Length: 81
Image (cartoon, rainbow, N blue to C red):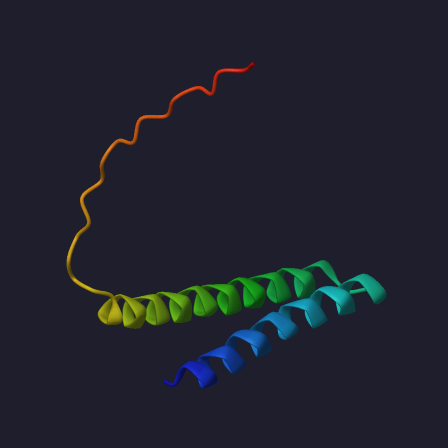
């Protein structure tokens, strides 16, 4: 899946979640329906999370493999005049 396709997928999922929440607020929705919508929202968010993981994996492939050594940098207090 291309990065552009992934972006469209993420935007569509977010729009769907927002639309479902707005619909539930503006209409009298039975509790069972609300629960099914919440479960669907969760599945959309989990799919988006999975898609993000794929993109992160692809980015990691492009990153240099070398590790940079961490070193402590001393910080000195500035003396006032």
